[in-house]
Length: 495
Ligand SMILES: *Cc1c(COP(=O)(O)O)cnc(C)c1O
Image (cartoon, rainbow, N blue to C red; front, side):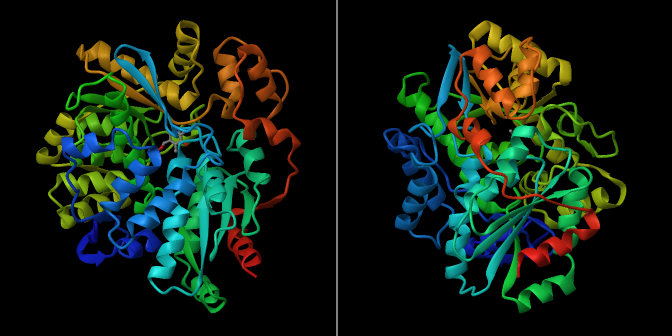
């Protein structure tokens, strides 16, 4: 199977090349040429499988240059009991007869990014061998908190790779910072950047387009790569949990094979919900895909009006991993819904770059209305959703998950749709202790990782053990740089 650029379908790469390269040179996103069909027989065959087996089976449909044995081994390693704290890997929790929560935070960093970032390093490392690459891949990651930690944990001590993470000095939660500066691994490093997430992100983008620096690194045997959610190697592992959740519900007698299931997804970059769209395209019986945004509601506006407009105020919210105004992965949806019209996608993306907005044609918009429903949830409503979930069901959720829970409630109130629905839980509540404590009516006492103890104490729930152990861990990294000094951090790291 070939991978096309969304901005130029004449570009065609193998899976290994697509994973290694991350982004097409024309700025487009690499996207598979077809979406293999999953029949009911295929789904039935997956019912008795473990999560690892399902992952290897589904990924094998797309990654023809990887062998079945290879993928089975990668999946065993990525989702094994030393990394995930439950054998189910991504368990589906039943909340009532028609409402389920897909818990995606049982991995090593307690965020859903682990599902992709435990797999990507293995795909990349194998891709280096398959393409005869002799240089070392240097992964640069700008993070608003979850991606950087999950990427470092995935790449720690992976052969022929190094990873450097930049995070905004005052833009991540205390637990997130503690997770990053205590990261293990000989090939990792972390650097705080003075400023906000956009400063860190634009700094990384500048490094990627700095030809002189790239040539210098090439001379030292390195090439730059990214662990960002635009890499196909991150989207594909996410397709797996939609299919796996459906199989679990059928296996457990909660759903009839073929019956429709809705998914409500808290999203920012449109990566997670795009994977759900692809699962549906393969034939998974998905009803509506419900897109949940926080106060940064650019996607809600787009999906309900057809106009994307990033010219708006940026808000820092208690769900920071969704504080995004440019949803990169939307480009893949436009490519697909336009019938792979690379010229049209290029035109929309040019308009976005020049004026910050574009409007899709009626053909695309009518398909969007059919597939998606969208809603947003402000700060007070997020707190209220955490409080409601805890009071009514004793179920503790993080602010990102709360956005999804609330938007699902809005969807049902607005449409009366009774289709069984799953909302995705993307982070452990113990990553966002201060917001969660406040929401359930407890004043946070103390700072940073101390709040983990308080949240455990007042709720009687246990934090994931790696978060609870952060207190004891020594800080390994302490550098802070300005945006202008970021290239120096790269040079110093790659000696
Ligand atoms: C990254 C992240 C999201 C949003 O994921 P997208 O790829 O933007 O859809 C939601 N919740 C959490 C906790 C995250 O870390």
